[in-house]
Amino acid sequence: MRAPRYGGLMLPTLTMPLTRWPLYPVAASGSSYFVLGEGYNLGGSPENPLKYLKYCQTEGSFRTQPVLVPTREQALKDVVALRQSEAWKAIKWKDSEAGHSYTMPEGATWNYLKAQADSIPT
Image (cartoon, rainbow, N blue to C red):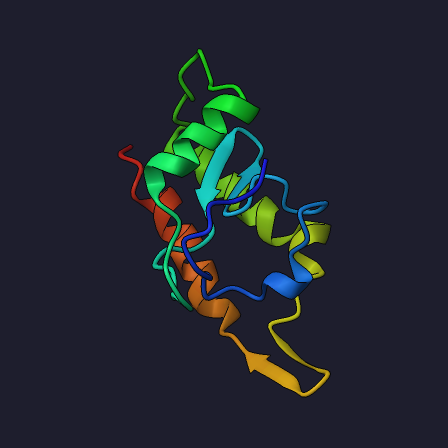
């Protein structure tokens, strides 16, 4: 399934291929799911959300069982495991390639992910 064409997230997507991040813009770690980023930057017109949902209905399948919310303790363990994963370690937060360069703050993304685990009530 392709991602929605809403724009780009402030993430180093060149070093986040779908082979390592198959649920992008979501990441699974242990029994937890984390949203990697929010707030798309537009470079034109975004895809109509209804058309994207129609694509999902046609090409995919929707979950029939709810996703269980882990305990706060488990989510905190899972977010640390995500940061220690090979997929995370392969991300280039600063890169320069073919005249294009970027620097993105890893700490901001990490804080965003950790806050998701921290927000689960005890």
